[in-house]
Amino acid sequence: MFRSEIDMETEALKQKSLAGRTALVTGASRGIGRAIAVTLAKEGAFTYINYEKNEGAAQETLGIIEKERGKGTLLPFDVRNADAVKKAITEIAAQQGSLDILVNNAGITLDGIFARTREENWNDVIDINLRGVFNCSKSALRHMMRKRWGRIINMTSVVAEAGNAGQVCYSASKAGIIGLTKSLAKEIGSRNICVNAVAPGFVETDMTASIKENNREKLVDLIPLARLGSPDDIAGVVAFLASGGAGYITGQVIHVNGGLYM
Image (cartoon, rainbow, N blue to C red; front, side, top):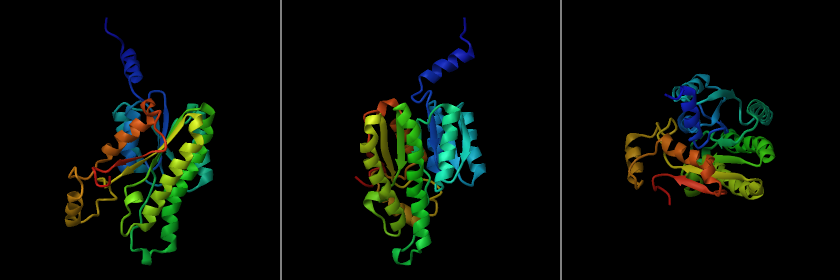
């Protein structure tokens, strides 16, 4: 007798590393955030796709998830707005019973020579990249601490530790995330909540698409693996950190950069 499709799907779901978990990925409409959302959903997590303005791109992310037979939904809010963040995460908990996995991915870069950097540019980068992590993590922790289980994964960058000319604002915001990650990991480890950071190198996204070809070639020459990364290279690491198999890893910065920075 052939097993029913429902039985087969149930068995397949049990084999996935994030089955039964609920995840929120900020800035998930495209690039690395999209790849992370798709990968978490593939691994069985019901995944909330956060975006601020680009609903069309977010819908594309959801379409990919559904095509892969994953589950998720859209959840628009501005990570800079603490009240909006709290409302959104409260909504997640009401719908799903908890929020198990938070991936703080939303971020921007406004590059330029430091001497010419305008104060509003500094504020914009810090507000989205660092204040956003603060807002989302604080709201998520209320639910994770109650359940005594959680994963917070913060997206930082290779330039947070290595530095990069023309990226003072971006580097400072991402370095702040590393300090937040390590301190928060020590503070809440006893609640069985792991907090880690993933530091991508140069990845093929919209953010790196503007690099001129000759500069791209020079950059690749500096990378031992001789290529820029892909969003999937980052997403796989995030999925592992979100899983039960990473339950003894916390306060770490995992560099995913092809050997550019060691």
